Image 1 (cartoon, rainbow, N blue to C red):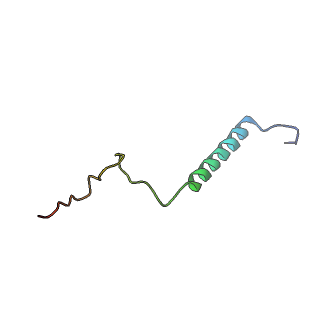
Image 2 (cartoon, rainbow, N blue to C red):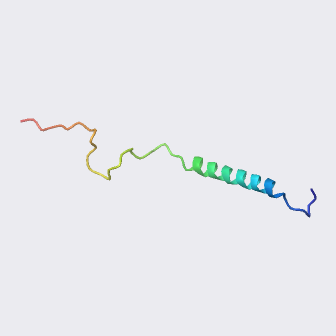
Image 3 (cartoon, rainbow, N blue to C red):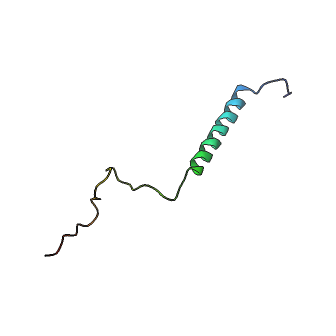
Length: 57
């Protein structure tokens, strides 16, 4: 292959796909954090799994 020719279509698609995958993985790993949100669907209020503590008389 000389400098004046282009990549074959199959090789071009392979290189393009690999580059997209590498960028996608790099973006995913760079956005990872140790502080994850709670795994529940409600938007607020009390957590149904929390014990209810009633006041004593």
